[in-house]
Image (cartoon, rainbow, N blue to C red; front, side, top):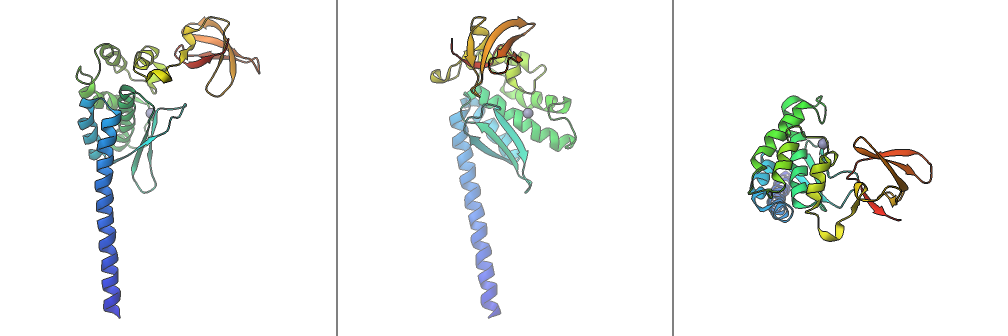
Length: 229
Ligand SMILES: [Zn+2]
């Protein structure tokens, strides 16, 4: 009886390990084909290497307005990175490397460092260097990208010049209007449905009033909005 039990256990274990190997193989296959779909061609192989080297579990998710991607260490120790499927390939690359830089910085300097502090900035710069070349980015983006990575920000969207330059590569149907493009006094709708009236420029940002509450908000010039009137 015991023999049968041990054989049963062994068989179960074997099936399980074959399952893991199959999963791993199909996962690697999935990552490889996925990267080809979302990244500039010459960035696929080096990104694939980064993902394998650092044991990243990559998830491509539906569009989220509030962020391009995120990094989380799961309770089982896995490093999960999600990136929005809707990003154009250059923004996708920057976002993916941004999130991998979180993982690498936490592993190198410990988890007490600031998420977008000096350690992360240095890591992000270091990881981006092999990509800042004409084989990966178009010539009109290169100087803007190079400038951004002298001091990378927590979000590439806070660098208005970079964000607008990258938007030129968004698929046409998703092209939206920016706050800086609409006339002063226009009413516009934000992604959350709230209505605002555009006011004047304060240094770099636009002061806009929310119609429902009368409260004032400052908008980055590259905030994407829907023009109402
Ligand atoms: Zn971040």
